[in-house]
Image 1 (cartoon, helix red, strand yellow):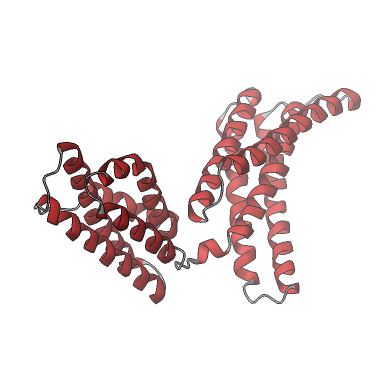
Image 2: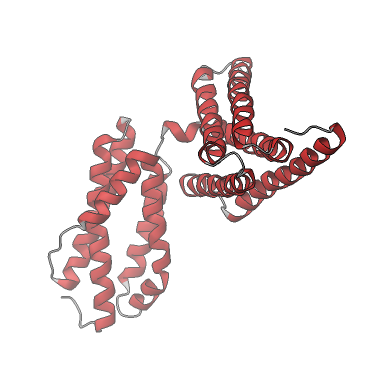
Length: 293
């Protein structure tokens, strides 16, 4: 051990040493299945740097450690399901909460400031080098998601009061949703083609998938509940809308370093407002047209 450290500082260094080793293993494991040679090399460089930091902290503790298997497994699964860019950026964001610990350590270990700064600057530069296909089409996915949320949320809310039967509402929503999926996907294809893009098919595919998945999730409450439980289905549908918006906004905020709160509130406000207005329209239409289903 280089210097006599307080128990608090030694505890922080041990924690940092453990994290560096575990994260080096995570980068190595993700590099094994990440697509693209440049991405693989970037992840391996990150792994080597984390291992180097681990060795530095080991000179203070004199302890040989093993990686945390549960954390390695967690981020490997996240990388496979949600993409390696999201997984590694989420992992790095977790370290931002340790600033107070680093400030405390700096009082006893001056070089920790330099190590921390180098780590942040270099890792940020390397993370920005990652190039994952799914993130190239986030705009297309947002287009499909937003359109489906606004259009179908409003339609289902209007159908709910007009029809008052979960099966009829689900049938109408399904027909509308599938038709709109093809319409939105084809529009995206033609738009990309007119711009001279060679990835028009991929672009429209991502848009269509985002739209269709949203359609299925929003109609689900009407399919699983009884015919007379249409108001409960409406409530569940609105909860699903909020969860979809929160989930997707969180994903893009981490993967693309975008603000979460303002984007979430904007999307949620628009979708819920449209649902309320459509619900009122459904009530008015039912009264004036004298339709009783």
